Amino acid sequence: MSYKERRFKTSTDKVVIIRHLRWTDLNALTKFHGELYDCNYFDSPSNTTLEVRYILRNLEASELAGGLSLVVEHNKEIIAEATLETSVFGIPLQKHIGKIGIVVLPEWRRLGIGTELLTALEHFAIRNGILSLWTHFERDCEIEENFYCEKHDYTKTGLVKKALTRQGKHKDHLIVQKELPRGGI
Image 1: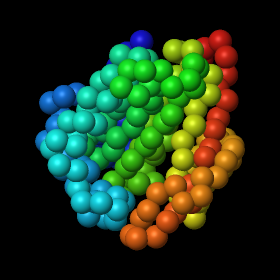
Image 2: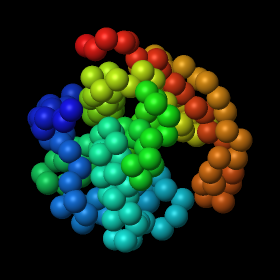
Image 3: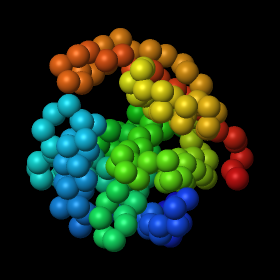
Image 4: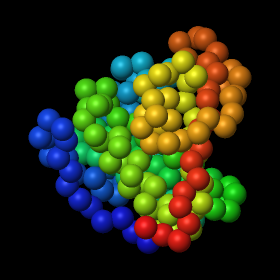
């Protein structure tokens, strides 16, 4: 089942477009990931074109296996990205379980974009028979914890010690999960 492109008005009345990620987004996605690196979201140099092609190829395979990849753009610039993965390179991870990821540029946060993306991912998952969604984030990140657990009813289900390194320090990651309603919406 596909996702229909749509317009969304933020809480500050800026109109953005939410749509499928496309191969033609290569340069814009490279720039977006570079901006995330510049604001210390990533702990490694910004993604090269080759790395972004790798990301796009994985997302394309994921979509073929029932996943979804969305971007949000404003004035033809990508400002957010969201994924629902049910596979790695087209190989299913676990039946009826999806992994989600949402990234929004700092200056576009707290405008409702993350909620809009999460809602789109959840609705797509329900319509496609996914029963549970999960994601992970740094344990000491209160903003993400509040977003998922307080605002959207995700439950803390685990902790991965020293999951990733950021700025030279090992970071623990919380795992959160949400059981989705069965039978569609």
